[in-house]
Image 1: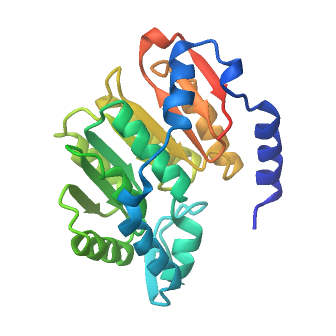
Image 2: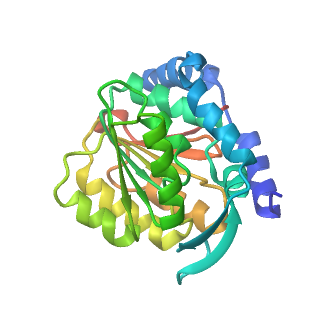
Length: 260
């Protein structure tokens, strides 16, 4: 059930959103027409959506041990896989968008914070020649995602289990530059900014960063507003569900709210 805050922020988004007719930037016009409202061959992803459907009916109970949204300490809870799938997975519409972004900008080195059950990870890994490194804090969820990757033959996914506050820094210390990063982990202000500050040490002018659930809470909205105004961010797009950041100085500091 959406909160009052989410109803309010969606109404603001609805008022502010624009279409291609209001875009004067060639880059943003091209992004809107070719990427945001581009088309996928959805038959390519039928196996992933079949797995999503399976998750949505899976009554297996998992004991979760993970720093979740709104919690400073590690919290333990028990949830059904079907409930996790219903509330935590990226919608198909957005996962398809991420594949179009990756393809359009020829992204190869991909980072994901928050594997969850691995559905979005499979989409991110669908582009030929790409490699995905994904981070998940919950051992129980990690086990489920690994099983899915193995059963679907996903060979270009590396899953790193553990507290992302430590595993991300350790990994990036010896990693190549990141082309595309998707942040969907701890939905709190301070951790989100810490992840962002860590990742931008490995970005380049062609990198793209997507922040999920930017209007999930006041904390996340504040985090979004902070990162989009960072000195290295030259264009930002608000799609309500997620925000997209670009780091190319030729874009000359632009922010838009787009229909999607």
